[in-house]
Length: 243
Image (cartoon, rainbow, N blue to C red; front, side, top):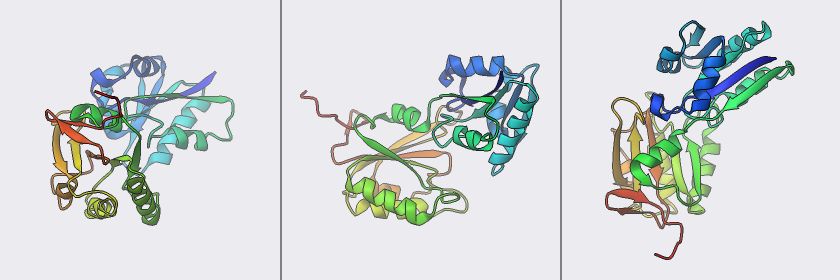
């Protein structure tokens, strides 16, 4: 059976990688991925053919994986976090649409929303929305609408890709939209380099997220809802149990 595992490796630290992810890589003849992610699993790739590409070459990576699978090789296509959450599982399925004989198996991993929330405490205990601020593939007007409606609906909001070198003001704009429905003193937090060397977290308010130069592309931001509070230094969203 021709097979491609699309493998979520979590943050990259071995302790956060599932046994299923490790097993998929072990079973594979070829490992494909973004350069950084391949390096994170390099110690699992002994004796395997390894192919990597830089950023913005996502479809190229899918085609490389597909070509190897067409030749009968089992492929592990590695992604950070969860392969099905802003990962490559969907793109791989699209690229392989005309190859129904190739089995595409998504191997889940720990996405930044979950691993970052664990660092901060328990902010995602109730309903939440995950929104990426990257407008490379999604029009900013769509992102704006999602921010406004998620804030109005009182979801806890987890923000991926809050800033980059070219998108310095996206987080500030997002905060302004959220503040239309939420207090400036709403408890928030962010985590940088989750599960990797240099991991760093901070609790703050919605106001303190604005003009924050500490936040970058490797940061995940959490905005509490109307019930979120800080309990003994931990960001917590109560679910409604009677305590």
